[in-house]
Amino acid sequence: MTSRSPNFVLPSMIRGIAADIPAVNHVISTAVQSWPVSERLKRLALTALHYTNTDVQDFDFVLCYKAHACLGVAVWEPENVSFRRDNYSVALLHGLYVDHQHQQQGVGKLLLDEVHLRAEKCNFSGIYARAERFSASYFEHVGYRQLPDDQGPGASTSAYPHRFFRDLAARHSNAA
Image (cartoon, rainbow, N blue to C red; front, side, top):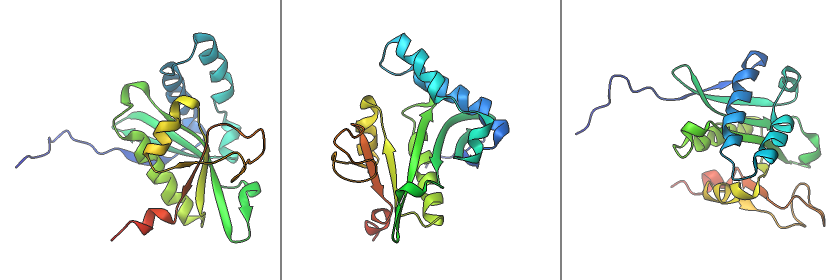
């Protein structure tokens, strides 16, 4: 029988506020530095990916903390009315970033699970995400399905090439 170390601390999920934006952007910076792209593209991407205090008005930030360290952040958009039809509404996952030192340790999955729970509480039916090419297999691994060009939010002949969807009702259909 194994016992837990007295120093074992579970990560906690908190809702980000404007004061958390520096921590959010730090996580994004370290995550982007691990991307398998050129240094120039990383530099250009950071300009577009960093958030400002104003963004707290439009997005819900979920931060994963362990002790005093921010390990990752998920950013989703609960107020995007363009993804609502009849009784079916889809929330947009705007970003998922895990600090480079904490990748492949389940932090991203914890963040997605928390976003899924919060989206369900807001009566969303699903989550829509646009991913980078090198992240596509991750989204498939955690239960998202890739959308064809003519299906789902953002569908068009010039649709974003790596669009994914997670049906939140399907999360419960596998339960016994």
